[in-house]
Image (cartoon, rainbow, N blue to C red):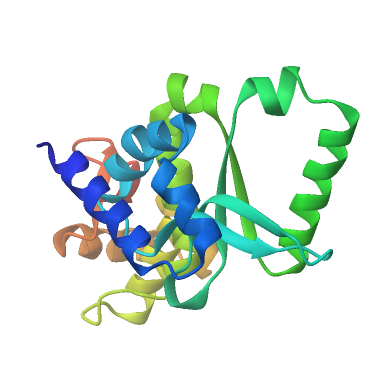
Length: 214
């Protein structure tokens, strides 16, 4: 069995066995949707390598005391991150007025309840998995940006947090502006982070022009 398949089945079984509410447990036992499975296999697992703090078909209450279900909830340390896979048929081409209004209510209620909500188009998962992986890493960075190695200096740690929030490689000028330091000083810190294995050069050989997380 491939690492993804083994990890996926263990993760899903763990969610089923630990769920005490019959509604969510029944949904999980029926299996996840095709779009969610494609997202996990082509985007989340290649980018993250695990399913820690990720919960499928997460149950939330709405203002009418009813129940709604997020495709995936990401909740490290009590944070509230939601990922929804948007199929073109039910969310785009075939969306009628009633469903459109309900979708807007759904997003609004989640936002008011403190959720950071990330909708991802199924077509993007299929056609642009690499960009989706970058998006997920930036999404995760919003919740774990405070967790950095204790071996880093304060300036180095802030650059790592800065890098986690970006969807692109960054230059020494970007870092200089962010830290309000000189370009030369920014290059010195970036060099140290490369030496420590936290960053790698994204472009440039003899003179590195941009950097990214390793």
